[in-house]
Structures are given as structure tokens and as C-alpha cells.
Image (cartoon, rainbow, N blue to C red; front, top):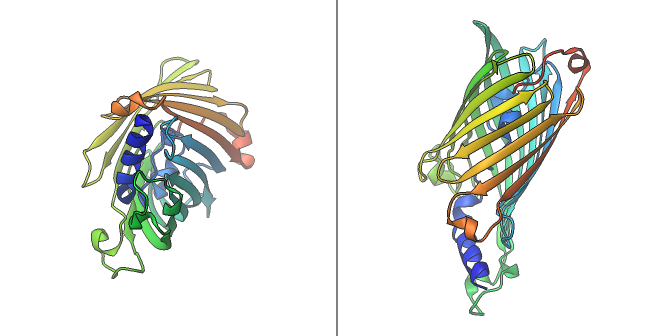
Length: 306
């Protein structure tokens, strides 16, 4: 009972902050589209990623996320397109996102600079009638919260070459709640908040059989402490990734990915929470399936680094 009360209290107290916010994933380094619209079309082939995340296993009402992302090149690889559909559920609140992404790629030095835009909608609804309260008759939980539809727009930039990349993005730059007055100040026009992401990674060839890819993700949101993911992945024989990540003040993550053939990849991540939450949860699990399609992927002799 104590576990249930603590878990429910934390989840409910965070609903106003969690709802309408950007989804947290551990395997983002295998598909940068989830963080940055400029990533769209950065490969010569069409790529799709399906991912399921079960966070804080053992808690009733803990976050569960399903997300699908697909992107590919356009116009002789000078432009890219991408689509994201995400379903995120935490406690009684469900958020469904549908986002379209566009990018333009310019040759710059040894790599390419891509500039990206994202636009779409978030549908948020809460079923408060399904919550059991300690004291009955609480009017705050007597009715469902009316569903809301929020248009959202974001942007990003991504510089990439064969063995390294750097990116910066604001997935939600502008959002508009029809129940509020439109304002370029996100705090006044919706309950969404701007998240700032900076990513970078490099691949070192240690031998023909072993490659090392350190990477970093820095996350900033005004109302929360600065957070960094420090990652290190090793690629063995160009087919098997194994890695570890440290998420500051949050978790240690173990990751694996296996390239079954040129078209199919599977991955798994386990988050061990380093906060007090680990007293009540056995951790978080994430499963990923990647599908790369097109004539170019069958001709490619290089493994997919990012």
C-alpha cells in the first residue's frame, strides 16, 4: 500500500509537468529523428524505427511509450522528409503526437549541414474517474478532463559526416492551446515547455572488427536542472552494438543492438534508476525494431553508425 500511495502521489503531482512534454527515450542515438527534425533524410535510404518503452516497471500508472518514426531523402538527397507517431501514457493521462518533419541538406566541408522544421499536433486527454482516492467525493476527480488538441512547431540543425555528427534542436518551439490566447511565449499559449537538445558523436576505428562510438546528449529545460547523457557504444564486426549510458542524476543504461541483415535491426535498453525511485521499481525497459528500405541499403558496404 505504501508503495502504491508513493507512486500514485508522484505520478499525479507530475501530470501538469509531464503532459504535453517531449518524450524521453534511451535509444535515441540509433534514430536522431526523435530529437531533431533536421535528421530527416540524412541517409540515402528510407528508414523506420518502432520503439516501445516501459518506464519504472512495477508502478501502477507508470509511463508507457510507443513511438514510430520513418524518414527518407528527397530531390537527389538535398531534402528529407520524416513522420513521427507517438503514444505516451502516464497514470490517467494519454498523449498522442503526430509530427511531420522536413529538412534541407547543404554540402559543407567534409559533411552536410541540414536545417529542419517540425509541425504537427498533440492530443491530450485524462480519465480522472478511473483514479481511486483515499477520501471519496473529491470533486477534482469527479469528471474527465476535456481532451485538448495542441498544434506544435519545432526546429533543429544537424551537421553530419561519415564518422561524426553534431546537432541542436528545439522540438517544441511554439505550441498553441485553443483555450488560451496565442502568444510566442510558450508559457502563455499552452502548458507545453521548450526543451533544448544538443547532441554530438564520433566513431573511432580501433580495428577492422572493433569501432568505438562515444556520444553525448545535453538536455535543458528552464524549470528543470541541466541533464546530460554520456554514452559509449562499441560496434563488433559491423553487426553488434553494445554500450552503456550515464544519465546525470537519473539512471545508468545498458544498450544492445543487433544488425540482423542490411534491412533489419533490433535493440534493447535497460535503465537502472539511480534515484530513490529504485526502491519501488525494478527499472525501465525499451525494445526497438529498425527497418531500412530501398535499393541503396542493399548496395551499402558501410554499417549504420547513426
